[in-house]
Image 1 (cartoon, rainbow, N blue to C red):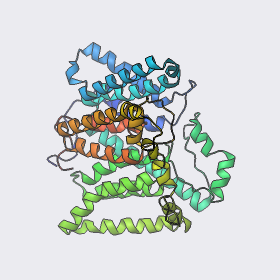
Image 2 (cartoon, rainbow, N blue to C red):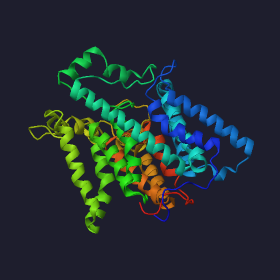
Image 3 (cartoon, rainbow, N blue to C red):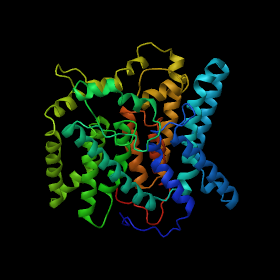
Image 4 (cartoon, one colour):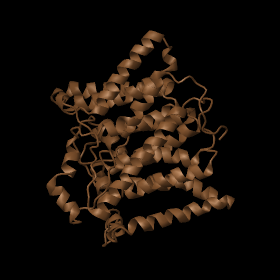
Length: 410
């Protein structure tokens, strides 16, 4: 990197701090349900934040070309036109789909009006790192509490009503299955599920590992701690992202033949220690990927088992080409499959072009985040779920090269 992670010279106004905090806390806030059905506290934070930004823009009369990200703006136009056409053709589907479409538009709209002008990366880095350590530490405590003492540490740390999925996990019936080992316990930290926790931890881990941080000792201490939390989440998504995050540092260490190679040994030792809590953990983790008979495990079938519907004649040619709307009810599909079901092949082409266009305009950290989100999209619905707010903000806040931004050696 040309510059270390350093204090930005840019004036940190209150609105920039607000944008950083809302963006970074959006995912954990989405764990909590409001009194309005289908709306979370994360959604409320984005709505209120968007109103404040709009009022701020109107008051200060900032030029819109400094704020709006055009590629995402046209993406919203595409979503709206696509949805309106389908609702005109099938008006009965309006009630089914409107909430999901509006929520997703809110996600993208937030990034459009906040990322480019108001998301200060230097300030965000400091807060993000602290939050990752706090959330990671709680995940580690959850892991130890259960596997050492059979104690459930709650996901709901604020005492508010959570989304139904969390309530189901901690139901007496499900808890008994977990205690008896019928279902493998996986810590969630304060997130809706381990995959979301992994998606939150991975980007900051990548930046820490690949950034030119002055203190190598501090850098690797933070990286190892976050890595341990990802390992203890027992998330397949987390394991894949760990490989992505550690790949360049390990290769660099091997090539340069210096003491950081010891980090590799430390990671292996940590894995052994984690697995020593319960001898069945390794077997259960592996069985999520591949069963004893060689067939695909639940983690694989859960993500890719339904992809055949794109090719087996379930949908007509025109449905595959033009999609059927974001509200189409299918079994779980990762992002690429969901894009085709929702927007068709034309939507997939547009989104890939959007990322390609952005890649050439982004600085090096923006490029890295694009690669990371494209990898996430292989096995998760990152592009459509709550993770999209964080990932797209990290990408589009790094479109232009700014002083002090850690963007030159990733």
